[in-house]
Image (cartoon, rainbow, N blue to C red; front, side):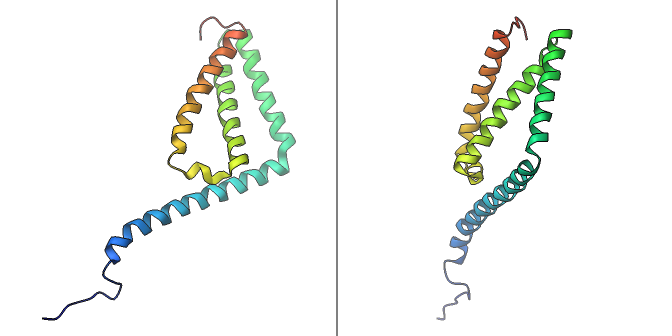
Length: 131
């Protein structure tokens, strides 16, 4: 009786799936790093224009809310500033590779709820009764 062996080893198929999953995770982390580096490079070159733009958007939303009584834009702006500002801080402290971690989705869910509650409190504090 002759035994057949594969040129790639007897455990090739068994080792292939974990290897592929590991490579996908590493590629995702590298992609997050690349996108982060591009974004930080842009912010470093244009930080004054970005801050002025964000301030103008906030002022427009604030004026629109008080003049027309429509608070949706202001709520959206405040929520997005809180949410993405927190993500920026997390990415700056822990590195953008943290976004590729599967468990980070739990942090995103908690952050979503926290920013939603904080936005509601902000709107209530400035005088919105219904939003």
